[in-house]
Length: 155
Image (cartoon, rainbow, N blue to C red; front, side, top):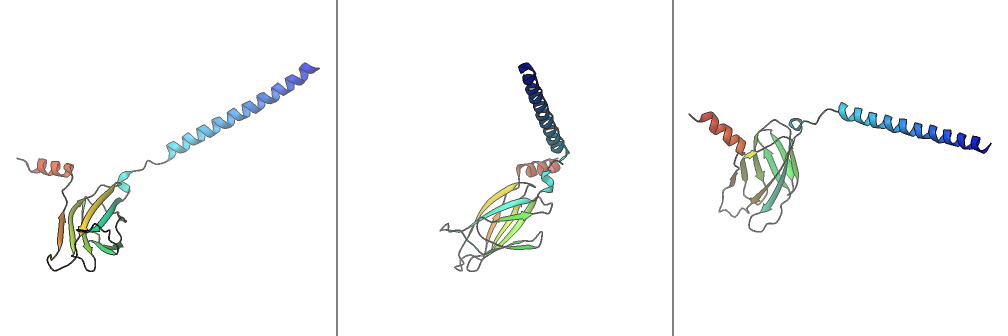
C-alpha cells in the first residue's frame, strides 16, 4: 500500500505544478498583450519643459518672484530660479520677457524649443542702478534650423 500513497502525492504535486505553469503562462501572455496594446508615447504630443535658472548678475544669488511673460502664448508666470515652464503650443522658438522689482527688464529672443525635451537655461538679471535701460539675450537657433535655412536660400 505504500506505493499507492506515493502515487497520490506525486499526482497532487503534478497537478499543482501544472496549475502554476498555466498561471505563469497566463500572466506572461497577459503582460505581453498589455505591453503591445499600449499606444506608443509620441514626443510631439508632450510639452517642452524649460527650467529657468535666474540669478543676480555679479553676485550669482538665485532670484525668486520673477515675472515671466511669453508673448507667443500670452502666458504670464511668477517663478523662482529652478522652476519649470511648460510650453504646450507647437513652437520651434520662444521669446521670454523677465521682470523683477529693482532689476533691469530682461528680454530673451529666439530660445530654441524641442517637443518632449527638457531645456535648461541660465540668465543673469542685473540690479537697476540706472546704467542699463534693459538686458537682452539672443539665443542661437539649433544646428538643424541653421542647416535648413541655409539650404533653402543657397543659390
